[in-house]
Image (cartoon, rainbow, N blue to C red; front, side):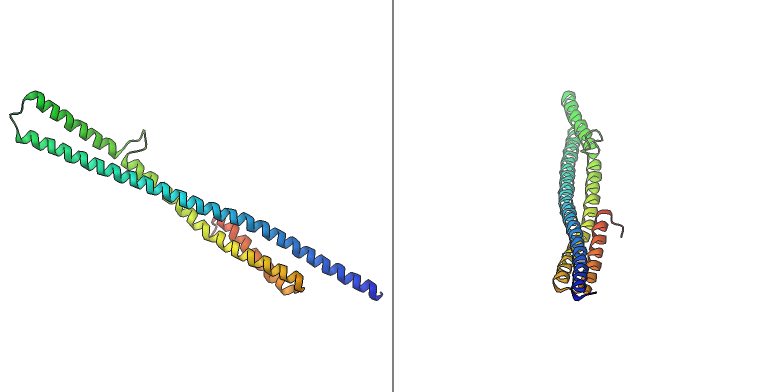
Length: 191
C-alpha cells in the first residue's frame, strides 16, 4: 500500500465520521425544534387554563355574592311581614311572591346543570381547568431540560467535527440522547 492510498483511506474514514456527526446533529436539531414547540404549547396551555380557572372562580364568587344578596333581601321581606301582621292580604301575597322568587333564584344559583353556570358546576369547571393547567406545568420543565441539553449537544458535536475530538462526539451524543428522553417525557410524563 502506498502513502497516497493510506492518506485516501484516512480521509474517507474521517469523512465517514464527519457525516455520522452531521447526521447526529441534524437529528438533534429536529428534536430540539419539536421540544421547543412542545414547551411553547405547554406554556400556552398552562396560561390559557389558568385564565379559564380564574374566570370560573370569579364567576363562582359573583354568583355567591348575588346569592347572599338575595338571601338577605328575602330575609328582610320575611322580617317586614312578621313586623306587620295586619298588612293587607294583597300586599302580603306580593311580599310572599317576591320572597319565593328570591329563594328560587338562590337555589338556581347553587346549581344549574342545564347551563353549567351554577356555583356547583362552576366549581367543577374551575377544578378541571386547574387539573389541565397543572398537567401542562409538569410538562414544561422537561421541554426546557431537553432544549438545554440538545443545544449543548449540538455545540459539542459541531466542535468534535472541527477539532476531530472523538470524546466530544460521545459526550455530545450522550447529552443529546438525554435531551431526546427529556423531550419524550415532556410529551408523555413517564416520570
